[in-house]
Structure formats: C-alpha cells, structure tokens
Length: 229
Ligand SMILES: *Cc1c(COP(=O)(O)O)cnc(C)c1O
Image 1 (cartoon, rainbow, N blue to C red):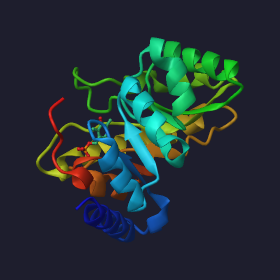
Image 2: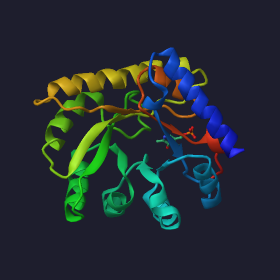
Image 3: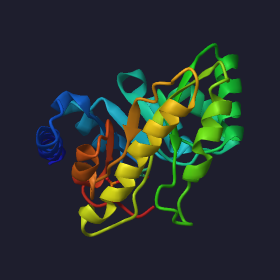
Image 4: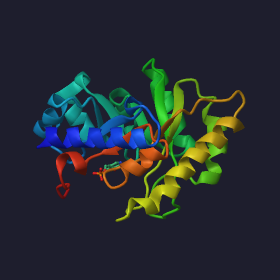
C-alpha cells in the first residue's frame, strides 16, 4: 500500500535524522511520480504527500492540469530550453540547472511571468559520463554569473549518486556535494545561502540524510518498482 510505504519512508528519514543529530522535519520528502498514474499520485497525496517530483516537463503538464495547485511541483529531470516556459509555470523548484544558458533562459521566462524562480544547480559529483550535471570545478564560476540574474534565486545544489547495491559506497558523493556547497557559499561575495542540498533516492536516502540532505527524492520505495516507459 502506498500509504504504508510513505509511513515507512517517513520513519526511515526520521531515524536517519536522529542518528545524525538533526530534526526530523528538516528533511523534505519529494515523492517522485514519474511514470505513475494520476490515481497513484492521488493516493500518495491522500496519505499526506505534498511535494511531487517529475522528470519530464511534458508529463508534468498533464498531471498539473489534473492535480494543479494542491501539490508543490519539483522538476528533477533534465530541462531543455524549449520547455522552460512550461517549467517556470508549473514547478516551484527546478533541481536540474546545469548551465549558465539554462539559468539565463529560466531567468528570462520568470521575468516575463513576473516571478522569481527558485532553482538548484545539479552537480555531477561522480563524474559518470552518463549523468547530467555540472563538473564540480565549474560550480563557483556558474554561481558567480547566475547570481547576477534578477529573476532566479539559487537555493542550493542537487546530485544523483551512481547506482550501488551498498549505499555506503555512495556516501562520498553526498559528502562531496555538501563540501562543494560550503566552498561555493564562501567563494561568492556577499556570501550566498545555498542552503538546500537535494540528494538521496530509494537506494541511498538514509546515507544522504546523514550527510546533510535537505530534500530526498523517492519513487520506488513509495510506489514499488517503476513501470517501463
Ligand atoms: C527517478 C528519480 C528519482 C527517484 O528514484 P527512486 O529510485 O525511484 O527513488 C530521484 N531523482 C531523480 C533525478 C530521478 O530521476
């Protein structure tokens, strides 16, 4: 049952918080609804889920039309510049900004809509060629440029760890994101909060919380194994 799974995930987050001396409400659960039906999503929302994570703008457009403002929408997948207008309209937070060009496109659409859009910068902490995300050495440079854009607000950083059967093996990537955040924070003048770390998925969220995650993005532990798409 989806509601039992949500309860169990919430408890596991709380235990990881306790182990690391953090308050259990310091971690936000993003329920990842990609490939899931409207009725499955409604079931999760009935069980108390507020934040939904989608990885494709075109899927989110349809789900947003059905479920609308009752949820808080998070874009966790790669964003193409031709989808920025819909993304700015739908999502409260865009987790996947990985270039200045994309930051500029979001800034432009946000300005047009009379908004300031919250974003995270996605960093490829593992260096895997298959992953989107900025190279860590380019982070400070991007932040220094993007921080001057008036209609976006850089709230923090996001990463996706490699798949691993033992979550301990990916702890270094979460630690790396936290350290990159701390470095970037002190490198920009005036200091910038960059307070949010979005890291941790079904296979590794407890380790991510122990390393300071503020947002975990969880799909399979809530809905079961993903359908093919
Ligand atoms: C699919 C996805 C998740 C959720 O993964 P699960 O293993 O199902 O928890 C989290 N983050 C991103 C970016 C994803 O694409």
